[in-house]
Length: 342
Image: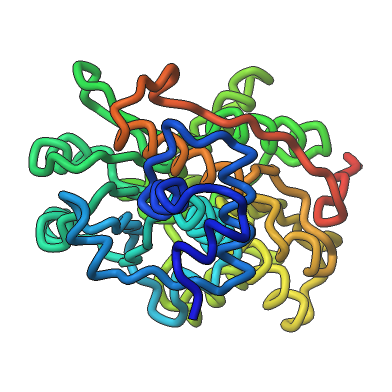
């Protein structure tokens, strides 16, 4: 069985240096030494004693990741490649820093507070936290906290967040659709009172319409049902010949791919009869046929940056940009057809 002493000998460093790496005390450990020690740890398949780590610190060495979302009735959150990409990137970065992961999904802010206190977390990442409860959570816990994809109503407080240029993404997709002749679009997303990112994306769509002297009414934001069969009924209704819409603008590739697959199976051709766009540019966007026109974001980078920011907070290091919004770009593929005026 491998020991700290054996790892130190193989890496050519002191046992203290190995212990510092295992305990996340990296202030005096160079990047080269860190990489070398971590390589030997992986090679030796060393498993640190969790109880000893907890006793050696004032916290549990556990980083909590709570995905704050309304549960889908037919799927779990991790079935969405976007969610699993963020989680995978965070888990790797957490492990590299000598910490462990606790994963939980909920839509109850009281549960967030309860879990944070019960587990004596070293740090906490909240994904998709609704804006109306962010300040409540911050007031209730003293754990270092980073948000992902969250918006905030309290301008007096500094929030640490890795987000996205959501409004710009909505603007780019709507501007492209307008250039392809689509002025009758419907935006399909989650409950607008729950997901601020979707509201920002719809706001971007409306901005593009306004820029062209057109109006995109509020009722063009349609909330998707939680039940898959109910969503499929809605897709059929919106794609029917009697429907006024020429394009379905989905707030995620997950729902866009679901819509495309179901409509094609139902005999409705995409994009000849109805165009469909997504948002995220995950693996679904590239595998579904036709391939999705969508908004690209780097979900893995979002996860890595969130953990890097959290580690700075844990170590009481300054964070130069607390609320960071990552860039987007439009990916034009095959799911939108140009409308030719007759």
